[in-house]
Length: 274
Image (cartoon, rainbow, N blue to C red):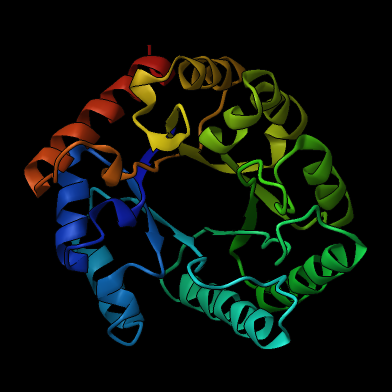
């Protein structure tokens, strides 16, 4: 049976303890905790406090972690920005280990200029992954890299680029972002599943609507088809709802967010537990 999860950033404006309360009330059995969750990020990264809150919420059986991605780029042409970004990932792995998270998701970075990545950018990515591997060494946690949106300077958005990385970095796993993949095409999204199913440890579940991403998966036909295909393949790990609340027409309070989250979990259960 899959773990039904939500990104903590869905409730970004609340305190950590409230976020866990809300996720429990919505029926989540897991949570993807973003290191950049403001109540954590802006208050000194209190891992001990986070660990206590996790222990108090028995319905949330597992925590996954998402490494920082805002305002940083581990493959930046600016060496100072690249170094700070890499150090953020290294620190996140340490925190993830402290809270007993089995998986951490990282982003691959991007070319700084809005041009197709070249060999120098790929070398920066290789250096970043080597640093991440060293930080993860002898730890139980699995590191999973996420596929990105199909932008001109993206380092990892296609099955071809992911295949090259996973073949070279055999220790690395995969976080499959459905909305990012179907922006290429539904066919490409299915190809991700066919080629890398054994490497998938976490799935970011959302849909697309025009140029918008991270919309409700229940309302997106392509996302529905990809989820049904994953169910047919026997996927039973983390299903992490990654919903952008700014896509809604008006501000949502916590009760409204919980209701929406519960509806999306029930939608996924109908697919994976028919």
